[in-house]
Amino acid sequence: LVTDRSVLSWDWSNNYSENVAKNQLYIKWSIISYNTIWWSSSTPTKCPFYISSCTYDEAKKYEIVENGTMVIVNEDRVNKGIYFYGPPAGYEINSLVHTLIDIGGAGEPIPEDLLLRIQNIDKDVDIKVFIGLGCPHCPGAVISAHTLAKYNPRIKGIMVESSSYEELSKKFNVSSVPRIIINDGQADILGNQ
Image (cartoon, rainbow, N blue to C red; front, side, top):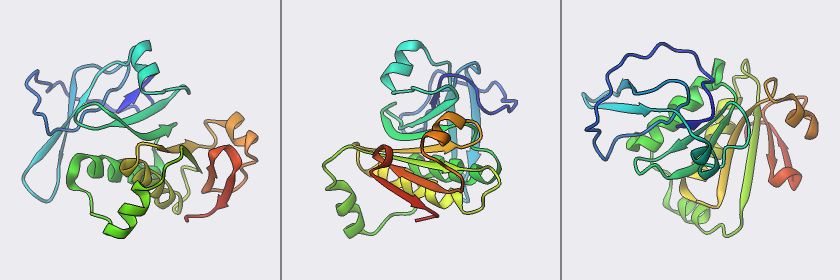
């Protein structure tokens, strides 16, 4: 996860090791340095998340253009086009956890025909999902956008917390959530689609 500043306030423990295995999920996070979050699934395996500060060059590399942005990267630190503009708090903690598990390799597979359709998209697609922290329907829309981004490097899936990004919300006349804006207004969808 790469971000320009800390957007969540948790107290992490110092368990970082320089010998991080190749198949682990990395999180880059500003302000908080050299910490490890231990997550365990139903199996006894553990997945440490590496957190470190984000420099100006990294912000440019990972296309961080808004304050408070988090970007999910894979174990090779490749940007997967999965962004969180604002805190994934409230119901959105579900989309953050789902995305981390999915990118970490423990997610559910999608049908082969759908995977091929996603991979065959040959145009740049920017999907902004405007959410509210109290919206129970928003995580599903965010997870869908992030899944599309995971499987096609030409797609960006962006969760936008509407009250934190008022200017962006006003630009697209967001008054209800989830509101999905594709390619800055080429398509405008209301609801978990």
